[in-house]
Length: 184
Image 1 (cartoon, rainbow, N blue to C red):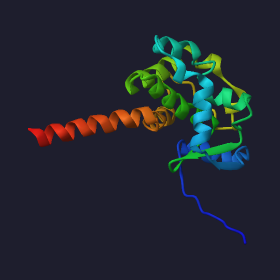
Image 2 (tube, one colour):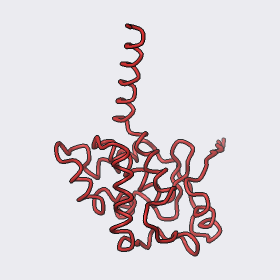
Image 3 (cartoon, rainbow, N blue to C red):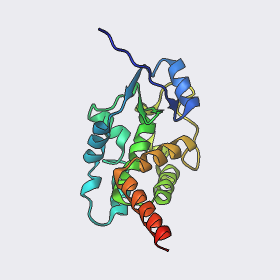
Image 4 (tube, rainbow, N blue to C red):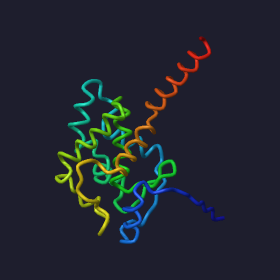
């Protein structure tokens, strides 16, 4: 017996991703498991950082926390694959941004700082970080800009809010607010 499933998703970066499909560089889709996400997060070391977390993120942003490159180098992520998380498909660069957001949440760094850090990285290191594995053919590498792209910022935000640590903080705040309302 053959079982098939239909998966519906949106693209995180529709213009770039559709062009990559037209270019023939994106050929696979994978529903990225929680286990695979955890493997990327664990490899980056963010869960073991006890102090000076912002410095860790700054110093590892182009090393252990460059999730797209480190995932590719470990043969855990592929340049021709869309990774689907919670109904959104991410190319290799964007899943790296998703994981960056998740890593920042694991470090306990606020989302505004994480997003500003990505903008700062783009301003100061953007051109030097041009990586062949993120180039999906003509019309896909984006144009140089001062700030991080909207698609990158969106991926970071979704990754940030996917963190169990972040979800726990939100639930605790919600529970405290509910108790406060009912006790007053």
